[in-house]
Length: 415
Image 1 (cartoon, rainbow, N blue to C red):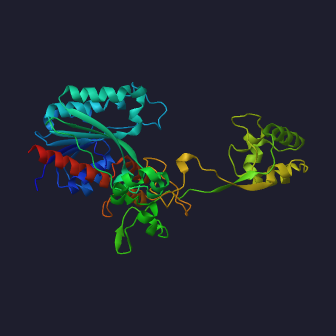
Image 2: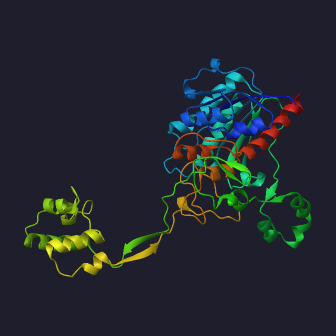
């Protein structure tokens, strides 16, 4: 099998590259500006990656005659999650660097991956502009939105794939292999059942979160390698500062009223704010209790209230308002949504990994990596935050492999 050559731009930790490598492509040169991602890439894929800003790398320093150029130009400026996106954001024009390298190196095929939000940016004008720019340098362009779950990835992750070739052949995208069987069966009517029967027979059910990471649910979080069911697991480390309840005052109370009350009793005593701070072992805390200010005024904690009562000898007027607490359940915002075991996971992001369904922690780096179909032996480098960013920014390896197979099919058809 021929090892077609690949140049990789905006490579990150190497999800796309690993997929192409698994499909027997040879990655000759890669680039990213993230130091940790480059360390991860070198550890797992190879030393051919160059650390640096692509804007500062001359095309002459990149190998000639690649068969394919791949890349996922940065998406922060495009993402629907970023409400400040606009066409003036420098990151929105990093595709111009990919355009430059493709124009200079003339690969037979190129493909670029980006977020679905690119479709709607500036009412579609940005995507139209990108498509036109690549067509202007001689490439036939097709654009598809692929959901990774449709291709055997245990994650609902919709991404745009921009595919171009200059060898006068049809652009080929991977065929779906999986589907939401339950949803399909509910939607099918008697009339269209027969026509869909053969197609549905060939599709497998979506791979669920539980099938993928369920075996780790009772495994203690650790950054040390561990053996689980004869598998060696790395990077099983997670944020654990997650609570599902909090304590709230039972009764509504006005900070200004408490402030007036405390000042009244303080003025009746010989205690100054400084003296109260010294007594309680604080430096500048007590002043906030005696200040009527929406920005810096505050109500003492339960423990501090009882200590103040000892020295100021105030009555019981506000005791229950300050000290009676009730436990409340946290209603998690979308960024803290809890994993559903019985379907593909929600999109793994570069920040705010999901909260584990039955643990007071977020998903571990390894759990997220598994949902991105990285193999067990793929080890991430860097801080916890950096590792999550690398995983969340990656193209799922299995989806990349499917795309690579289509790319090989196109190259073979021409040869």
